[in-house]
Length: 204
Length: 316
Image (cartoon, rainbow over all chains, first blue to last red; front, side):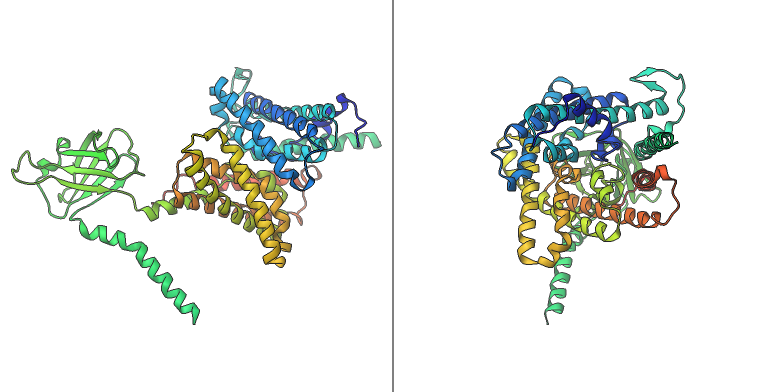
């Protein structure tokens, strides 16, 4: 079975229709835990993009020799290998950002989104399609993390990427860790509202 | 016939656990304990010279492992009845370690041997504090924001929540014990620390597969009830976070067990609370844009706020 979507459609699918954070509601732990700034979101997004793309390609490459009964452990070990790679690279070249990320880089191994894409897509499709699907999902995750980070950083600290934009701090509430839950909930509701309004406008 | 026997054995075991504490208290003429992170309180059996007691120079404090490194005493406060002395330190002490306090009265009274006190926290209390901390104060779901995918996925109904919580706790404990053995006896001696992630996740999948196979053969009814949750366990970040944490903190076996139990119990608690709230929410009139997941997030945020109240809680 091969997908009939073009590479562009695969990428936009990951960013919009099946956005990992806002649509599939997967990989919520970092979305709540460390989405306090745009930069954090970007860094973790890059790590996830890397792991997703390389795991997708690896599984897609070896899909014919993996026995179906041991596929889940194979996926987990593949992801764990790539996570170890990005973990060591970040620790070596970006120690400051790595320290901020804490345990979350290592926890990418348990992110449901990556395993799900391997199970649903990469184990059936060609390497090229899996690559673009991985890129789409990774970018979608990065987009979700960065938009959350943007809202929380702007409302909480009045800055974007560390630059002072507003000149004052509107709601300190959004920087506090537990506000991640509220922020994700409110943004999901916002996207739902846009979709409902769009449908209503289409019907009228 | 069997039940009373078991009870007696359990009682004996419990007494055995408390025995060392009683022995330690009886063997010393005076007691010493930590107060906060940078104070030690000595209570003396017989009142001594206030001048000697009040002088920081007469004390020598060190950790039991490093007796050569003396920790400077900033101030020694004697109480009015001269029965207790409070030693303050500039830098916070590592209260997890046993400390030795030597009171040297030899400068004023010749022929009197220096007295040494051992200061340590009750180990049982320390273990319990790890458990309670993982359960409430640092609840993995509400204050560490881990395991959220499974948390939102399986907290729709109480039955599901209970099943998932119990399955998760069992797998958590078993895999944490195995991870501890692997870390202490294979990864650490051979300096394979960079393989942590691969080994730990491999052990978790192995545990899940093993529990699956054993449960299927031994108790099919239980398997029917809990089997579906087993696959979900792998996708839960907590299951990999706990082995990583116990490797980072160099916990010993009992401490690791307590952390795993606390993490599992905390997850069960969070799931049960959330499912109770969500069952009620099904009946409530919620705006269409918030229906389903968004409102669940808002409620989880409120739970997290409530759990913030546990922070700073100190039991032992």
